[in-house]
Image (cartoon, rainbow, N blue to C red; front, side, top):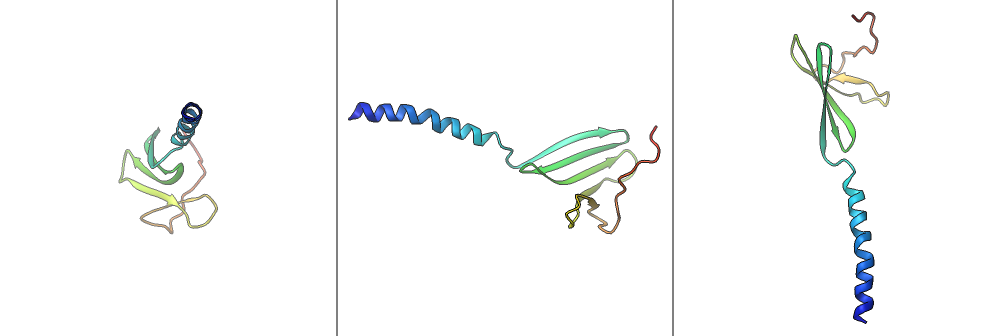
Length: 94
């Protein structure tokens, strides 16, 4: 009887360990990605893999935050001025 219990434990233990490793690979908590793009530095804050806000730090001027709008359009609005629309187009870039 003890040998069969030991054998069952040896078979089940690796399966339980592999299951916990697969769960541990998922992003948990808050992560920050920092990107530099010309004159701005972007800090992208993600909670459980979802983009929650973006901090924009320009070389000139104060930093500001962009947060997802209340609509399902995927747009971002300024946290300090939600009525201001953020443009998505670029006329010239040099």
